[in-house]
Image (cartoon, rainbow over all chains, first blue to last red; front, side, top):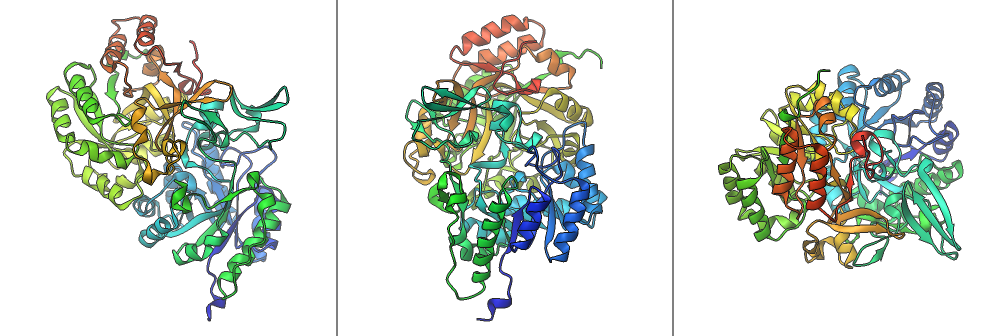
Length: 333
Length: 303
């Protein structure tokens, strides 16, 4: 084996704060993605994200340590008011971001015209689930990488990657959307706030809890998302992870509270020709970032050798302490 | 802006989103062809390619029947094509003489520079996206149902040459997934589903554990349990530049629903009276209009 020199998969890690970004870089991230502190990105949470000044410093820090910074501007610009989104693209370019991650046709068009040298990544929020869709973005805007929606099996990822005229990136760890990302209005149906328009899903501002004789009722807007008995764990009421009922049966109709962990599938993803793997969680703590990035660094580095893949336990960090291979395994469907 | 006339708003019957038995499907379109005052009818499977074989034999007859009835027929494409046969189907659709409505970006290369429609499942959230698509041949844009009137107006003003349509009646498509929730609920997977979705002709109601009416599942699609109903909002929509309203088929009498909308648009019926008629036509349905009023989609906003 002479593969030890080969970098098999680029490790793309989240950062919600400048401190988290430094943590991710120090733990071995090849690239870190982050967003500005406003509704231009899909993790528009209170206390999170970067000012222009912070992003500038972060890019310097990352560059010094051999890492890239990708700026997510991946909500859809508000009709009649594109200025905040265009400004975000202009500023990311001026600050020297390695790439911007976009989903909106209007913003992709703007970026391609205004900043022809700026590297464009297609956000998962664009939901390009086939080589045909990806190649549309490549031809129209010169997109260099597409982040694949979490709807494909590993075989399908291989097929899409083979036929796509740009690099592909897939999710490897963290929160798991069961719905196709960028094509889900469940949150705005219940709260008026959506990932596409506001950069939030099931926002904390609309969450409330009620105690019903010991049963904890988690609510989002006007709807009960879950009822937990005293001995049951209580999760955050993310809409699609709740328990609901129909005339046929009740329970987690859409998905259990689980997290994605594809470390055992890394050799298959590398063989599929995927360029980069992405860890979800810009809203997570530095301790979380450190543990997850370090574990993935070890796994990715081991890929280039004949050593068995190390699988440090990350279960305590996952939602409901459960992990899944998600859509990468066909039976998930 | 001058007071706009609702009489200029046309009606589009959206594709049947549910897994109806083929006989019901044919009878439905025969009646629409003869009796429904809609200008445009979208036909074709959008949600699940496994349902397509049931309809492919009768589709040409249905199209011909609708065209004989004076309707403009639009062919709807799949919402989430990932398999090779699903992607090829999109390519085949694009060869038809009828206009095609794109419900996924993957079909757009096949439609480049020929007149086509953009469906409500493609993300057009602003005027720049609308202009980009119109420049490439889109003649109609059905906007995502979660858009408020402020966005609708900005988009409509930016593409005056295109027909801008909004979701006007029926359960609202809220999400699409690789996973089939009907199959999951029956302890099956998408591949072994045995078409359990065929029992729920308007989708399967999903309530919260506290009994609130919430969502509806339709195979891989999740819809609102409430029926969007913009009959009262018709003057507001006209003021904001809406050119067409989409009525999404349900098992209630859609001919009567479309007549009620047409009469109201023509000024022949008071919106409040029309609302009472729609209530009697869909007595089980809870109505909502929150999205166009920039609030929770589940709400019904008065005034």
